[in-house]
Figure 1 (cartoon, rainbow, N blue to C red):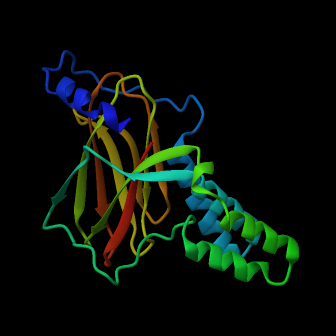
Figure 2: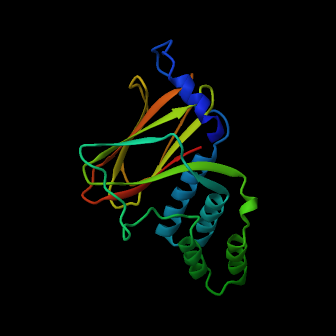
Length: 224
């Protein structure tokens, strides 16, 4: 998708022909790459909470099947102060595709040879076996601050927008079109968030993320 971005930006610069809401609320079609990562995150958090290895292995498999690339064309604006800059010691959202998840799985597998083999198979998974691609931006949000992300989306192409926080503070999120019409929203929560939509036409969309906690939050914003 990124290779078509320049053409999309040119089209967006033309005068709008309609003012109606630029989306059709739909959950039709198969879930995409962003939805899979959000599912992986929710499964991972549940597995860590319960200490169960099989859901953890499922979360790792789901996450490692998606290749992540940096998002292009997304513009971030801090509202209510300067953005918090990432720090070397700042916690990042737990990643089911990361080495820590595999380490936890190895510990949970214990001396069970079957479980050990399952963990080994996941660890040996080759990058070429990944069949899905998602885009991602990472940022750190100070307490009480709002980040506004402006991103272009293609008309008639199903889109997914996901949010994963580090769990240090609850995040509120709203997705809206260029006219301000709300598409998806989630009240302040530490849970992962997913918005699925289909723009009616090419246009810009805004994702607002508010940190309602007292601690900084390093989050991941994901698109399909």
